[in-house]
Amino acid sequence: MVASRAARERKARTQAGPLARVRIDLGAQEQFVYKISCTECVVKNDRPWSAYRPGEDNGFMAAMDRWIFHLREKHPAAEAPCLEFLPAAEQRLHERRQQREARRSAADPD
Image (cartoon, rainbow, N blue to C red; front, side):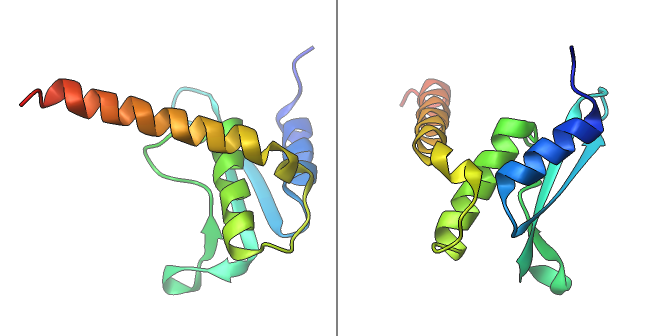
């Protein structure tokens, strides 16, 4: 059984913890776009910090990884269920960086 958008949003909100606001929108290709914002941090024009990145992967794993890194960096004392996945998020970040570097090396063989 496929979870509804509302059920996915509730699950993501629970995992993200009390500092998060979570909203799920539908993207251009009818995919779920996760928007996790911080209730305490603001950026330009007094907008809340958000894990959403235009033009990038904003699926559950990508958005939650960015949220986990935000919590660790800006709110180190915060507790949230998602923090148990910090090692896996770090591994995915390392793999993405390696892939990016490999693509750069292939494009610029010197």
